[in-house]
Image (cartoon, rainbow, N blue to C red):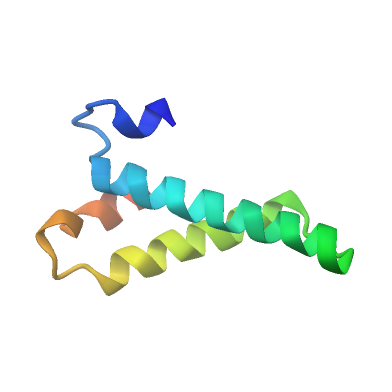
Length: 76
């Protein structure tokens, strides 16, 4: 969580917050699937879901100032 608060010119705080939110959400979802449905998702599939979530969040908000240029940073 300290990574979110660190000031950095290479990774804007908006991108760090989006990445952290998507990661927590998908890990929690994976945990609930294992506990309630006895269904386990492989780690590479969870990573793919997190990546896709972040891409979707950035794409949906590209018109906002805080999200300008984040796609390039995420894909780099």
